[in-house]
Image (tube, rainbow, N blue to C red; front, top):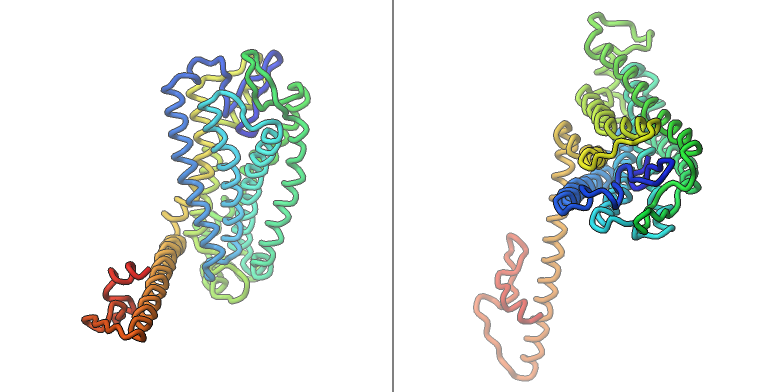
Length: 395
């Protein structure tokens, strides 16, 4: 379920993840609010910066444009959607204990939350299948694991999920609780929304994890448990085939069958399973009990795990992928160089103004003598002005 949407019992709506209910004394305590806001700001801040860097790295670095990285970029955009649509509104909810974004915000934010959550699940499934094909069927990977195909799959995932998530627009609305405060919650009874949630739970959590377990087991068998080489006609990768397929040109990821990349993606799947498990388990249990379990601190733990899942992937890439580390450093270096070039252009413009000013004074008979060849003499080795004080005075 989306983080801002209330879990509605038969008697009154209570919050599941974002709002804990204005009547909850723990959720209204200063200590709880301080811890909640601090954790959300920290995790969401790190996640937003990290995922933006992933998107920029894949878009701007030529050698990072691989099929696998296309799926990782889709995952980064989905995680950004979750952090912005679920994490940031939670700050105002924690501080004010009421919904301040109106009906339009309730519908839009709920939609974006489900969109980001479900696209991230589909993206994980997509790169898991791509990894299986690349390692277990390397000959087929030459035509199936391509950037163009990855783009089409990603477009299909986003289109399907955009349409699928519209169902939640008809299930939520502004609710007024017993304290007279607005909340974004279900406007239908449990009997109506529970089947939809269970379908969502199965399709976007259980099935992707079951598929990942099966495919990564097959991948592990090929990479680590196959002692004897097998003929290429069998379609199963061997060590020699692995090396040959990684040398093939074309639109396939550079060494898509790298075991290190596979380990990194497996870690992403494991983190997805573990960090979503507390929330999914809690909502599933609360869906069938008459008195839901709504301990404030445990709900904060569940919510933090959700945000951490969307924030931690760039950290994993940086720790486990040399290419991502180099690309992140290159992106930072490019920003520094761009800033240096901008500063240099400003200084050079100042030098030009200073020279024009001296020329105008000289034409009026005013003689100006400047030691060392003038204030805007550039260092021939570095191309930067050697006397900066007069330049800024001129500007």
